[in-house]
Length: 192
Ligand code: AMP
Image (cartoon, rainbow, N blue to C red):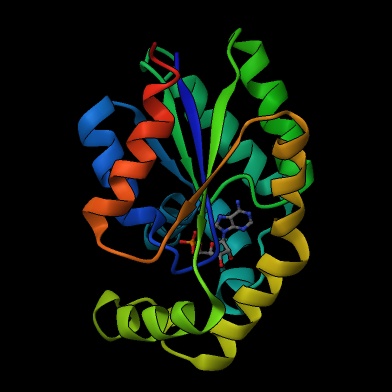
């Protein structure tokens, strides 16, 4: 199994690049944002627990996210590997992910970090909000809260993977293909 964490602030291009990674490597995509939006749409208890946090651009509590990821890994344990998108977003989530994968005798191969300047992120999110229908992309105040949550709680996750020597930094500004080429180079090293 080759398991990848795709890391970066909201608007860094994680969704776009995930699609290309899945198409090339056949990994199972686990996007916690997509999973939450599905629960919200279906009106499940989990969706109800997540809603107020999502509406305000805040992170959903760790135990809720970790439980949902645990279930999804169990459901797809025969996959050739996972790509985690938008998860882990706190150090507690990163520690929990290591433990969850260890139960399946596997681990994270590398963490790909997409770097994009803050002004470019805001521009991209507001642009995406015009067509995505996502309430959290349409309001500059909410976008600022999400970026602050990222800086306060998610940036330390990069340290966590740096200590494990698993981080690979990619410039997230440029053409989609050019960025994907850099990502492919990083992933290919784990198939050698
Ligand atoms: P995203 O689609 O990744 O931008 O996520 C949308 C929203 O879902 C976030 O603003 C959070 O409220 C929630 N969310 C998604 N993933 C996580 C996570 N790993 N930890 C906490 N909250 C999350």
